[in-house]
Image (tube, rainbow, N blue to C red; front, side):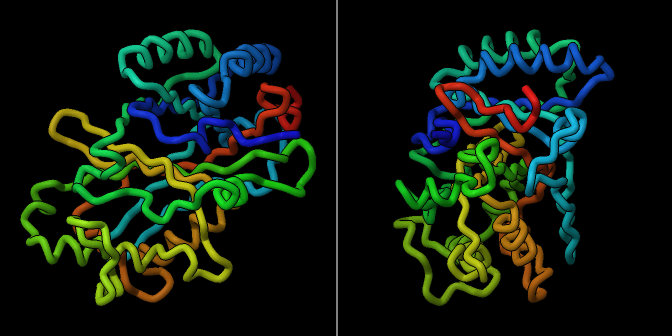
Length: 295
């Protein structure tokens, strides 16, 4: 029986590193050998692996439902699409230990892959964004989470796999801190003090824009986002897992105002720097199931 990579459904950990890679012009034989070595190192728990569309196409593999993240443009809003061939999400308790593992993995992947982007994330204040608001309040749990995440009924090679939509958001902290407490709460749609949803929040409130049960069909996702900081800059590495990318796209259509002309309040103080989709293979017998890739 195939299951999701365990790190996806596991409880959040204190630290993580996101590594994205582009392909080099190495030969197909060497590429497959490199991926076979990577598969041995990827336990799906401390190392979650995602396959980008360009890598799947290089291997002549068709992953049903995998595509390139679209860019979104709205009034004063521009969310870029920055696709990559491969994503590694390293999970752990200590960034020093994670850094050591990351260096070994980067060496293992040479010369088939070149690092495109590195970003360290961390769990903050029990699961809050750097703005102080709780992240992922509406996450599904237990069997519901498994159903939201896992692909089923599409053949043995797809069973237990999932899709990842990932975006790096950068916050303008000075802008956010200039808002009074009520304005901040209305941007999010919850009170920061007790995380209670505001009944009279404006239609632009993030909670209203992304209410998962308000879509048709419902747009449930499992969020595993982490805050990030680089010098004085920082924000949220938004990471969501789902059995179809349609859920993420429905939410982004509404957030950017494409659905009804109302943009999400988050865009008043935050912007998207990167965005990409990945397919995360399932696990079978304790190993990544890479049958769909011919490995």
